[in-house]
Structure formats: structure tokens, C-alpha cells
Amino acid sequence: MSSLEISSSCFSQETKLPLSLPLVEGSTFEAPGKDMNEVEEKSKDIIKFTSEKLSVDEVSQLVISPLCGAISLFVGTTRNNFEGKKVISLEYEAYLPMAENEIRKICSDIRQKWPVKHIAVFHRLGLVPVTEASVIIAVSSAHRAASLEAVSYAIDALKARVPIWKKEIYEESSSSWKRNKECFWATSV
Image (cartoon, rainbow, N blue to C red; front, side, top):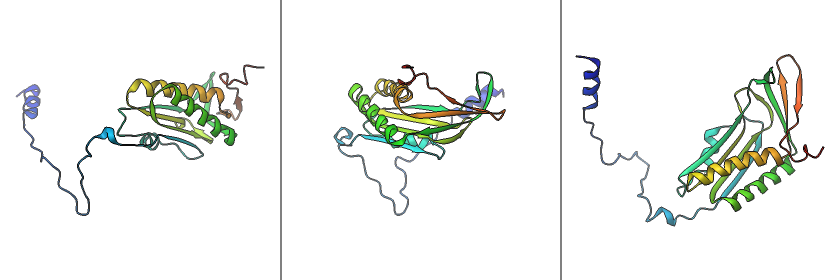
């Protein structure tokens, strides 16, 4: 028998699954309500600054909604190089009261421009090693166009308006605070 024949015979086997899964003792199963469109769910803006490692799964779970068919994510990570120098980590600082206020304004701007449900913006502070996430932005919406455009707008606006500073730490024991070319106060010099 050739390998092709073996493969095709494997796929021709019929597997029967039960129509309903057995319930585990102590659990309950309820059929979905009359109509998922009737579900009322308050929109959420979740903003977090932390020195802890960021989790894409955690952030994306926060914006899930039965009313939405799309979740778009932006994950910004530390890369290992900049202008020929080997980067070993980044260090972030923020003026938290103003940073949180600016991100709330960005969320409000997004809601005026696109029909989105939930928005989550998580930013890491302190040291962020190579390959780890510095920022995660998640947006849910009924359709993909709104969430994709909103996520793009959110990261661009965050970099331009939010007082977060980044220092690159290089392998050769040097470091450099980076001027964010996109922020509004850098262009007025």
C-alpha cells in the first residue's frame, strides 16, 4: 500500500460524536437565551500600567463580547537592535495621572469614530527584556474594520500623546533615553 492509500483510508473512517456532552457533576448547562442581540452589555475601557509581564491572552479575554465578531490586537515588543547596537532591554517610565487621562481621551476618541464595544490598553513600566510585550491594545467590535482601524489609531495616538518615556539599554553597558519623534511636544522644538 502506498502512503497516499494509507492516508486516504485514515480519512474515510467515520467518527460518531454524542449529540450532547455529558454534564460533569455539579455543573449546569443552560441553552442560550432567546436572542443574543437582546443581551445588554456595558462598554468597557480597561487601562492598566504595570511592572508585571503582560499577557496577550489576559488582555484579549477582557474585550470578548457575544455581540462582537472581531477582536483586534496590537502587541509592541522589545526588539534586540537599534541603529546597529545590541539592545538587551527597554525601560519605561510614565507620568501616570496624565498618562491614564490621555488614554481615556483616546478611548473616547475611538468611540466617536468607530462602533467598538470594549477597549483594553495595557502598558508595561520598568524593565522589559527583548521579545517581551511593552504594550498590548485590544479592541472588540461587531465587524473587523472598526476594530482594526481603532487599534491602529490607538497605538499612533498613544505614541503621540501619552507621557511615557523609553530608555534603551545596550549590551555594551550604555543606555539612551529615546525621543519619541511622534509625540506632539517633540515637534515644537
